[in-house]
Length: 176
Image 1 (spheres, one colour):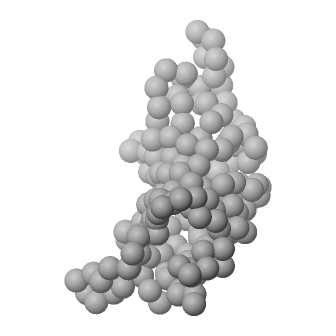
Image 2 (cartoon, rainbow, N blue to C red):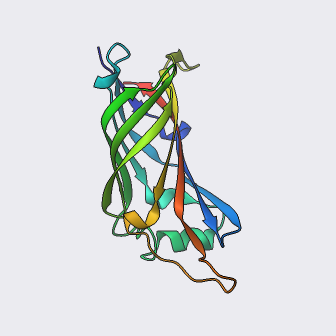
């Protein structure tokens, strides 16, 4: 039997890592992750996930860079205010792990991705009486495949912003 959980934005987040100037990694994240998980531990394949991230919550610890990432050069937050994920397939990948295939939409472009998931955890009751589950997930995408193509050549060769984007999700969800 499916149980419905709501993603808790106060205890969930989406982080990313991208190569900068071909010498170091820059990390950032989004703080407003929301959505619904319908989980059936007896029939894992029946599990579904839908989530929405508010692009305007991007934070790389540099206000000027954050403003540039929200601009038309990158995410174009005014025109594309959300990033969404909708699962299409959920399959067990061993003890406590799963592969979730779904449609990721960034910058108005939708591509299929596979999330490597640890979890979900067994249910636990928090101090306020809510029943929760948690999960972590990772994937890699090419930002250019989502129309995020802005870049600048650097004097020593190469480009300012790498194309490979690592994504990490930490999710806490409350039984609805």
